[in-house]
Length: 491
Image (cartoon, rainbow, N blue to C red; front, top):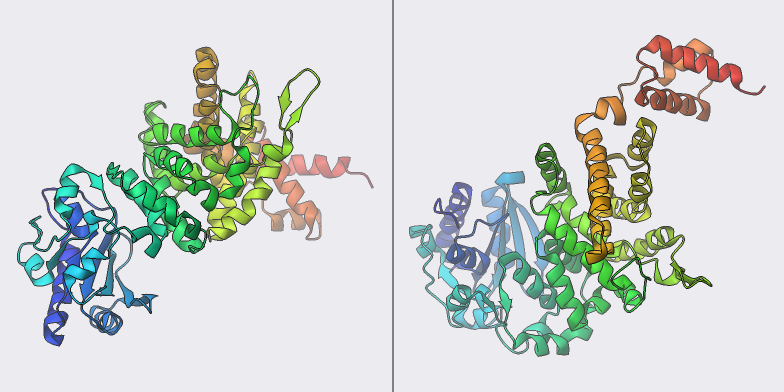
């Protein structure tokens, strides 16, 4: 944590929890991530606290939800785990309360996932000095593992007990920049077949959390080396060892992993782009289509999946040239069941699907000597608010393609094109992307005695495009254009 200590709202909520626990005679312990983050002096992104009680966690949670005015959610009834959500947005606190996994708190800690999460402090003691990082109960030497920056499973069967911990290991490693203890790999390999049984929601949450970090590619490559990617995303396996010809320096699978690595690099701070673009790009990528799941993670997911249509569309011509014509459409189709399996929200799935489908389009536009206002307008008309995401996914793809074979002059020209497109979206939207409407449908129907129907939409689209091109500046000019179009229509 920072020197400021825990957030005031967190202290307030836990103080109220402590009062309820004392009144009901419930021994309550702070466990896991909060204590780990305090030892690291790391400010967590979200206020989530794990609490452990000897028994009756679900009943205790119901009381907490009632007394604290929060929402009650059962996480695992059989295991006795529930959540209370208090507040919203930046003032939201999640309390995950569970029954002891054993007779004592020490036995509970010994059954958790990793030693860095197997520490506990009685809630009353934590509240006495909330800014302190001392750990009272630490049977597996978790504090030492934190200092060594080492991720070690709590017991040999940790991954068999919950195979999603395989993915969580790489997520924590990426988030905290911790090394995985060598003892973990064979244990994960043994539990790997059971990972296929994990729920799509849990896989989604861990995978998107990996992609949210700036070390996502390293985690994905490690998952690939373990064989876990074949279990989690078998659609990627077909790209292994698929040669792409001289234009690419990697096979299909490793190209997609490299695209994530490139996205890690430039999405971390946008330093390679013009300074005025950095703040709007950061805000765009931090935007959440679903609470606590950012565009940044979805752009990287699209980068990971963008070429899954290549293996089935690979063609070798007589001259030896390798082509993948139509792979973007095939990839978009193959991505649909993947996104459904991951239980993405409709809007998230739409964005990833759209980025895969259109990932070649910026490259085609970049070859033009001059990108016209019409081309800019049509690109963002089709992509909407996913336009910047598509441009960033293309840049990750582009930077991953030729590697050391890239020509610097071409890269500079393409980066200039990229910045032109992004500047149009962020700084010239009313002029080039979504110009203010000069006419609406009702005005067209009244002025030209037209019925409602597809023609109205066609006319409005033509007016908007002409406006984006700079040909129209007033409603009178728009009316004149519509009159001309109607005059030219057959019949």
